[in-house]
Length: 167
Image (tube, rainbow, N blue to C red; front, side, top):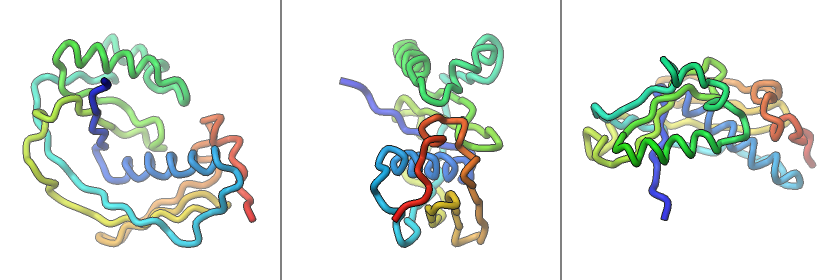
């Protein structure tokens, strides 16, 4: 049995970049599926966590292995590291988002005891529209937006082959 992982981002914009990427990846792997006619609605929420059992993959000896942690398609090193971290009783892994164009931080919470509060602290509603131009994300409040054009995730070969024009 594989234990679960709670994936989080330091900022909502990073989580939105991750979500936009994975939505586009779905359409890349489903080339005959038309773009949805309406934006999809997502809730971004903040969760507080606290632990002394965390490790950061952006510094020291782990930072020197950045290419392993940031490979666009090979997740095997990250998964093996997570297994080793869990065996060492670590609770949180901090790492750079591969999907966020600004490369901000993501977190993998390996243990529920790392959560400092039982409920989300803050929520935002985001709408993500996919089209042949890319992905557009709009936050309802505070009003803001982000655009991910066709080139944004093209370093990933799965997105590079995406058929953007659909009937």
